[in-house]
Length: 143
Image 1 (tube, helix red, strand yellow):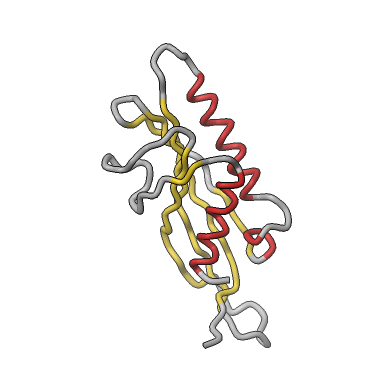
Image 2: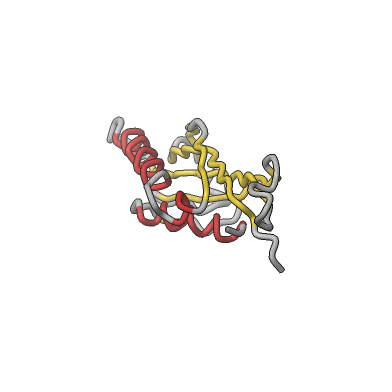
């Protein structure tokens, strides 16, 4: 797997979950970012070696690639807990699709999902739920 393949695999799974991608490289929580109801952004956070090459007879390097995923939901005044409830349902759906058995993401890598945090942004017009996803895979070193 490569860093761009890991990013593509995450985006593919979140699209499969029925969420819409925010096309801003700075993420859904940035004030200048376009926020769309039931949307997501994926930002690479770090890439580091993770304790060795894996198998000694195979060229490559085991890495931990951390991403920050943000889910954005619009709050509509007068609808009570509809947006927070939808945000939690979509978080569950995102985790389910990211963890799905036998996808490119889970067949070629191991994943670790971090705790989710929620923020109310845009003067309370949006809920942004964010969590870290670590993807551990063999980074090919073949030139």
